[in-house]
Length: 329
Ligand SMILES: Nc1ncnc2c1ncn2[C@@H]1O[C@H](COP(=O)(O)OP(=O)(O)OP(=O)(O)O)[C@@H](O)[C@H]1O
Ligand SMILES: [Mg+2]
Image (tube, rainbow, N blue to C red; front, side, top):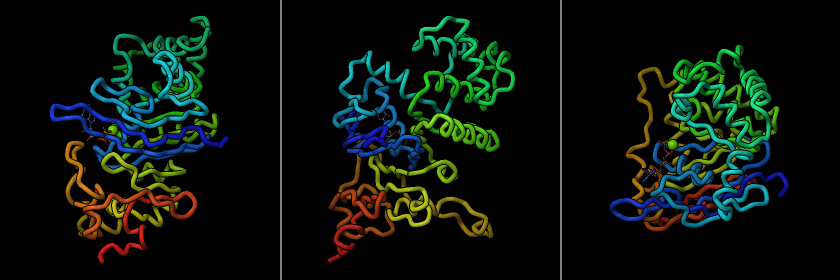
């Protein structure tokens, strides 16, 4: 399909640990369309970061993609050579992280780092790259680019350094931006500014964004579509309205109920999903969410649900949606 920018088929990523080899991401299927923002949401440890690092092939040495295909436009990224994939990474897909400070090199001024990023994939002089860097910094809302160019990373606030990271990411004019918790480390006002900036850039450049977050407020603000991850799998996928207004998976419902609201503040205890995400070495049998699921039937502890396609874009991996939920008998 022409509109599809990225298509992930049956991706499984494993880690080698002291006790064995275990999957952190298990058989993920996902599509991102041109110009859309897909949010990936889920509790800590659900596999969001491992999924995105797999996509960029930036896994640590103990991690390995065990199977699957990652189609970016017409290329299966998993069949590219190392050099070819680093070209894609520099040119077509860019990534920003939660902690911009750690992604910037502390010993070089910001300007020279952006200039290097530009010159690594464009044959331009230092002077031209410097002009482009200033232009990019202006685009990401930095009012005095010259000052920031001369500054060292530690001299910038968190919000400013995230803007510099975004400028660097944009320097290659990517078609897809992967943002892993880009605003988690920032205070709420700065968070709102950065989200607004990402929206603006996406529209101006018709770029696709894969935004990873555990914050449903960010999802509501940014997403066109949402994929909910739990224990290395996608358990629900749908457009943002259907996820918020008509969540289907008990896990999605639990996540939504766990968000504080004004009505809850009158002494009512905030809902929490009991228990925690299982470790990759001890995934439960059947549905991985079953030990924590308030709606689980006995079959849920034995049978792994399929991903059920519901209306148009909506999918859910839950037995309730198979056989009309008649699993008790
Ligand atoms: N290098 C590694 N070796 C072994 N297991 C790992 C490694 N990196 C991640 N994992 C495991 O993979 C699972 C998914 O981790 P991941 O970092 O993708 O979670 P996440 O959804 O991004 O969480 P968070 O919201 O905290 O960032 C976790 O159980 C984690 O412990
Ligand atoms: Mg993460």
